[in-house]
Length: 524
Image (cartoon, rainbow, N blue to C red; front, top):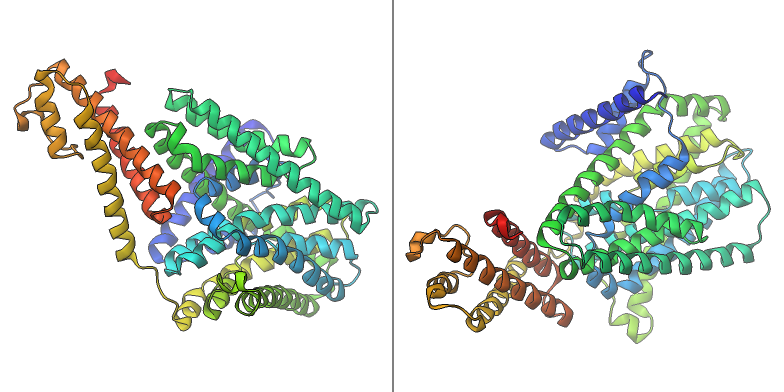
């Protein structure tokens, strides 16, 4: 494809993604489902040429930024608090799903090898981080359930792709279970180490950058660098990206400027939106070619319907069996587990939230040409994604039927207020100790009266707009904001507030500091 055609396709993708998402958002429909339908309808227009993307572009160009965007917004504190539950789902459930669904596919699909069946199972095993987060946020699930779902969907991609690599190796050559286990251990250890190294290095550099443009530019290349380094060292590039994102998201308030953090949040939300939805549109545009391949290689219409139903049933049954078995283990197992047990309703909610998405759609194109019935397996993965997205529309009814306790938003709001009071008091304490000239005392009075001084006018306190007063105001308020941020980070370290209150307070301080620097650009 020539450069002009490539740019044209990119522009059309962005326009279509924004238009469809905006329209269905107003109607309250599912944007991913709508994009797949629109793309599928367009694919059958004779004048529209088939859209082909190299699998390497998906693996190296789309997955790293998508995973990084989700990771930097995930709370390390919450993930660490629920790490045992998250690991059981992100590693144990994926492995169980690969085995259970793999054998089911091997039994259901004629002329398929066991390695290809396991490859299909690995492709459809991971849940989608963005889809799960969106659903969980709208349903008002208990905070613990939300944390577990987000942590699972973020980390299970690494497990699934490691399993997929092992299955692909078995397709093109001969591998042993011992070799698979060794490769998995190396992938996890090396990938995790690379992620920590990348996160620490970038964090160290960011602490020494004083330009928001340079700071955000560095974060834009971080996921690609972490992925490539992890892949070159035979580790999990996916895990490297996730660990780096988690580390940088946690360390950002301490090492980067407020402007850089505000820009970073907006940049990665935009990147995530465009890539996530463009992939769904891309898959829809491939619907015609996928169907043609499935029809030519498949066993027939009704047999295909039965195969799809069987694989979906195996996928749902394996998730429910593992999650409910885990719930039973927590409720009836050793005392240490019983102390962390969750209700049966929480288990049903977690088991029901098995939405598949971008990782599955991207990973299925990584199947090598040697894969038996490759186009047919791609079609099956496509059906699983669409069916799970449609099934996700039933989640609100399921959650309402479970009568789960909703998170106390009043309590969260109260925590935010208490935390902001602590932060403001820390700022005032710094103000009281700051050395000031007699002429600057009126500036101190202004800041003491209202620590959140934005919107106040200089003449309200009898101040003129002299350079001295402006500089004093900037210097003293900057010191207060630094103290406020330090107080919030100390509260996070001590575990005295829930993470939503911490994030809200940090974002409020960042917004005020950004506005302050916009008022006094000569100080930047």
